[in-house]
Image 1: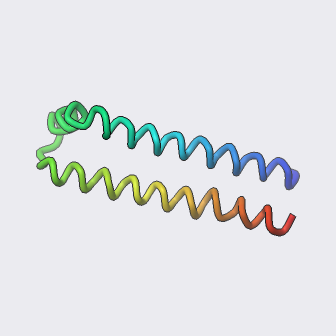
Image 2: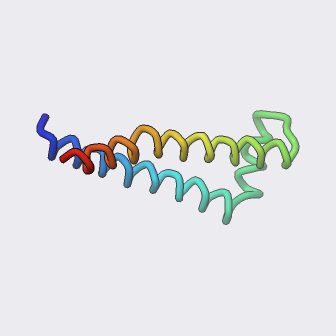
Length: 80
């Protein structure tokens, strides 16, 4: 792979991952009660636990995006 191909791969990966994060946030923002009811069919949890799990999941996903996509992309841009 060339440096330009790696750059493009990281950029597209960054965009796709942020879109997934925004969709996740949007679904929880606009359909919170429906998603909560869907999950409580399978798991016994309070709404506070549900919110905590999703907030922590989004935070971990965002940290993964920053470490695995954005940081390498910035490093590649700085050296190239």
